[in-house]
Length: 136
Image (cartoon, rainbow, N blue to C red; front, side, top):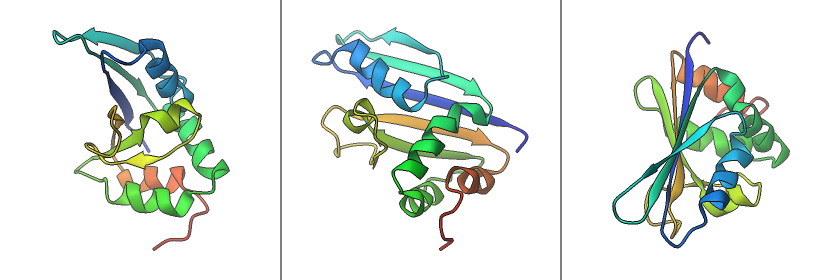
């Protein structure tokens, strides 16, 4: 896989603690540096990006440790959009150090962590993240 760029973002609502949201993201993407963009409504967005598969190492390890490879493969396979994977993770689960895929809206009252992986070979990235999962 030649080109892999990982982008993560999460909205920080006025009722949330910025550092807790930062920790939630860092629990899954520890090597992605984050910056805060303050919005006019009292909320902000944490964003970060990184190059290479290394940014996905912790996610891969967590998928394996939690034994959710098959479920992850199904979610990730349905998240392919052109040359990218676009998926969402439950913010509260991430804060607790768990991987839980979610919908972009409505499933989590505080909103998800949004992840975009731009790459030359989305199916190769999915295979790498979910090694050992039975193919559908």
